[in-house]
Length: 470
Image 1 (cartoon, rainbow, N blue to C red):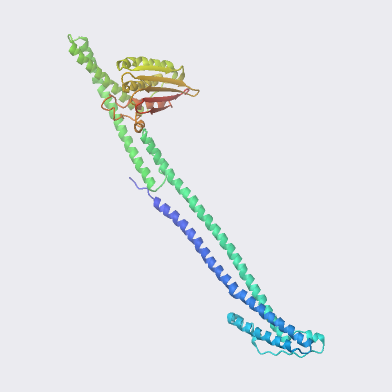
Image 2: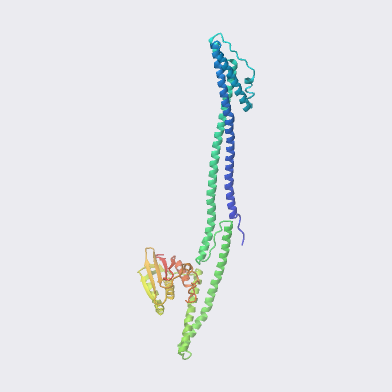
């Protein structure tokens, strides 16, 4: 058997799962990295920008206080309290400046003017405007700190914008990653399941057809994995079964043809002997001749059924459809089987309603005779076999109900197979297992349907339906 595997089911599942894991972990890794970056930026805003902003604000408050006390000193003509406040503010300013430069040494060069030696003049001016004019040194310091404050605010806004953009980017990447995982997880799973189920459906169809007893057909090979190999193996098995079935059909046809001629000669010889053509026949001899005649008829009937099956399997079943009276068909069938029913103590009951449909009457009569004959065969003495016929606008239905032992549920699907006989009756009831198989072939050839309902211990009912018009 040639190999067809290209990519196994396990490999397909591994690729699908690997792609899903890669997308998931790539998205997760990016989000984790982005969170770390955002945490660093947030830390910089808190430890640098916010701290620096707070320190500059405090230094500016001290310098503003120094300017106010200088003006106060000048306007009041020398206020010792104002001098004390000025010294206190400048001292505190210097302390804050030293602390800030230790935390933020990168501003050492920018604030170099604030750390140089300085001189502040407190002498009153000649005019009021001179007294209100800010001190030049303090004003320079204030300008430097205000510019630093502005730069720090701008830097903090830049970092906040970076945080916003990074958050938006992380949200987008997370959303796209989630959608990709969902699309690959759900969509990929559905697609993979569809491909697997499609191949399994083909194999199941072939197995189901094989289980019904029909001629096994090849299934389509829809994949190159293990299911494709299974389909290929099934096709090889089906081809072998078809060859064996053809060989068996050919053998049966040949055997039936070869046996029919000598069987005819045997029956004619028995008839001649029984008729006394070769001398008088006593009662004991006549008894054995009748047994031989009965067995010859039985063997001839078997050959006829074997030939019927062979013709049907070779699709040579010719139907001669015509308008058929269903009620007449039922009555003529029961008429032929009355003697057999009486011999077995069985009562035949007809409940057929008037109906007309298009079919081959001889073949449908054969189906009815097979079903009623089985009912007679399996119904114990004193039982009944009832045949009903009903009609509807599009179909007619016939049912044959017996009061026999019934058929177990596990055996019901097999009774229409060729040569099959229930294990319980194989040794007690004569038969070939061909009657129901032939009946099914005839009904299917009429585009009808045949089925069985049975409850063990309460008899069986065989029904078939046919199109009213074909």
